[in-house]
Image (cartoon, rainbow, N blue to C red; front, side, top):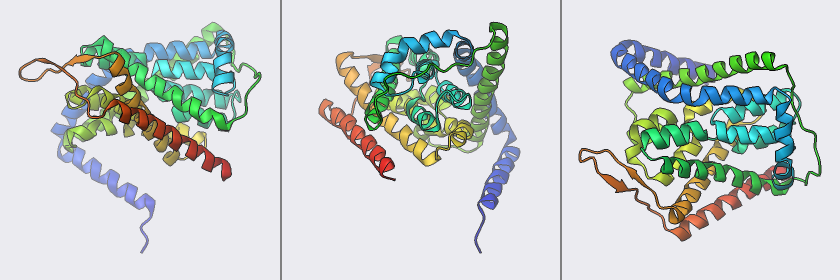
Length: 340
């Protein structure tokens, strides 16, 4: 007898509920830890920036930014200028800013479905607040390391955008998309949507932390599932290039948060997952190459509390080949999609 997908989902969810009830003390401690992370890392780092970026995107001032970025957006990336603000705010603001702004542009008919999918393929980044401030300054105790990680993940995203642009026609001029609202109304709408997005992110962090309080996942795998707690609690296990890889993959927890947006843009999760892997590989290679130019040490607080240099397992040539290989994979994916 064929077991329906809904039945499997129900069994899994009921099993998780039983675990949370049976081991309520561990689940409570895990949820409290997740709440602390959300309150200390995600909310102060994401909410102010997301509110400001949402506010700008809903007023006429966004047109100025889109026009200013137009040469790069249209001629280099071959994207409509309306996408410019979503790209820069998404990469700087941090996840899920890029996905939210992409969905907003698509909902307002400022970009089409194909453009929205292109944006979602690379515009998922940790942002300044999370990578430089939270991961770099607070966790690694090194602002320089945070800047290097942010540069690595951002450059990797732009490399993917550039490599995939060759299958599209050059854009000579496109309109600047924007949905202008009065400043007061725009502030109210932006605040509400930003609070909703941040609460959604925080809720996922708390839920996964509660489950991890009961189900012990191997520490090296935690960032692949939930990026915030996985990095904050286990950064000592990873080199800087590996942290860049994990930040770009962004964790399954974030993937689940974006499922509704992925569905609205008619993008398959498999395709989204593949782009996350490619972005992660690009970030690893870029970070390794940057470290050859800008050597960076981070403090690892072990029992001896000593400062050590982060080890690297690949040489310079192999890292360069990895980036080239990733570019070939991206072009091959795009070529196959064009033939379909």
